Image (cartoon, rainbow, N blue to C red; front, side, top):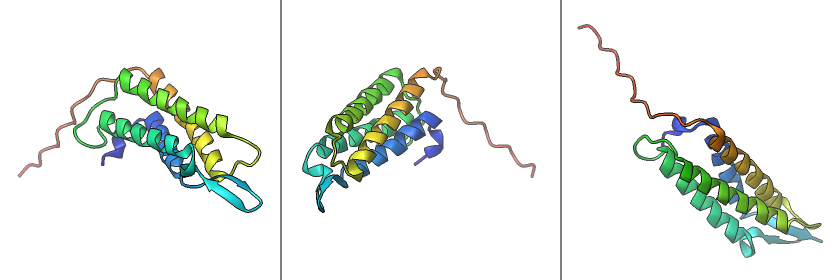
Length: 137
C-alpha cells in the first residue's frame, strides 16, 4: 500500500470512511441500558457505502496497484456516497442516539468535506518518478 500517493483531502476521506465503517458495528441507539447496534438497521447501508467508497478510493488513487490520479467521475462518486452516509446519519439521529450513530454522522460529514475539497483541487498531471542518482564506481 502506498498511502503517500493520497492528497490531504483523500486522506481525510479515507479516515472518515474507516470511522463510518467502525460506527456501523457500534450502538446506534441506547435507552435504559438496552442498545441496538448499527448493523441491526441502517448501519448495513452505511457499511456497504463505506466499503464501496474505500474500494473506489483505493482503486482510483493508485494506493493499490500502479500509480494513478483520481478523475472527476470517481470524485463525484465518492461525494455521492459521502452525502448518502451523512443523510442516513442525520435522518436516524434522535434522542436515544449512541456513539455509533454519532460516529456515522460526523464521519459522513468529514467524508463530504474531503470529497468536496478533492473536487475543488485543480487536476494534477501524473509525473514519472525521478531517476535514482548513479553512484560513481
